[in-house]
Image 1 (tube, helix red, strand yellow):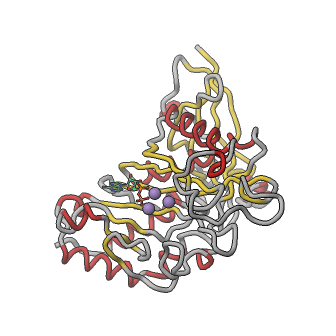
Image 2: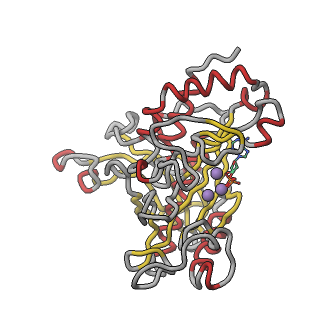
Image 3: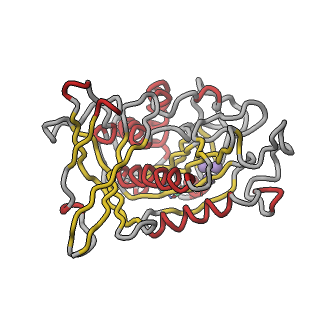
Amino acid sequence: MAKYKLEYIWLDGYTPVPNLRAKTQVKEYDSFPTLEQLPMWGFDGSSTKQAEGRSSDCMLKPVAVYPDTTRRNGVLVMCEVMMPDGVTPHPSNTRATILDDPGAWFGFEQEYFLFQDGKPLGFPSDGFPSPQGEYYCGVGYKAVGDIARQIVEEHLDICLDAGINHEGINAEVAKGQWEFQIFGKGSKRAADQIWAARFILNRLCEKYGIDVEYHCKPIRGDWNGSGMHANFSTDYMREKGGKEYFEALMAQFAENLEEHIAVYGPDNHLRLTGLHETQSIDKFTYGLADRGSSIRMPHSFMNAGYKGYLEDRRPNSQGDPYQIASRILKTISEVPTP
Ligand code: ADP
Ligand code: MN
Ligand code: MN
Ligand code: MN
């Protein structure tokens, strides 16, 4: 028997962007616990905008479990928030809104800034660094500074050790801006992993005295904002596809423009301007390899005859991947497959 540190992680009730919350309980197991072995737990919802003071209990239902190599016998436990009955999802529980399609695959590209003293890491204390241009995938102190690479590398290792399916990392277009990509078969699996990876990054940065800035446009002016492009495919898109289905799907995305934008992250009008590799927030367009469109068809998609995955470029870095996946799957479900 060994004592395991179970870090129960959940999303609080703040809007429009929930915060990550977590607390530890210690339990004994023969070996690393499985999801089925993890008990439900409770917390004080009145401290997280999830309950009134008089009846403040909310429940935590474990839904995903990852090893945490930063702690001895560490376990990360992603949870859904439930009502006191333990079976009804709490209104803040956006994961419960996903009508999961096991054949749906999602790849999220999480962009973010590392911030120190209220500005991007590497910005001088007065004014601005050289304009963007040479930072994207850059190497060398001038491009990425000293500490950032250490953080992103450490983050990558902790995530890989946890079994999180990172597909890559890169320095982004603005100074102090980075990206990681996570791919998952099953929308919940991909979205759980984005939240777990955000948790790991936020916690890692504590010891560096650095904040992770997820806002989609932290620096005004000629600096890129941060997105979270959502790449998606279903069994039908990968196996049958075709021009007719694709056009019907795009018509449905156009029809639901506002519903999509509503869950694609706050303040997105600051980022979706038609500049900096984005389409305007009030337009829906798609295009081949077009990074100025709302949805980009990769070359692989066209070459295969409208088959494969598509990239929705509109979701932003602060968006909730549960709501984003939920909305995309809803729109897909509204289009009949021939
Ligand atoms: P870019 O920066 O050019 O948009 P990235 O390589 O950063 O491209 O991201 C592409 C994403 O597409 C990756 O997260 C990858 O996992 C995802 N992806 C690849 N194939 C599929 C697929 N069939 N279904 C869903 N997502 C996919
Ligand atoms: Mn990318
Ligand atoms: Mn990017
Ligand atoms: Mn992309």
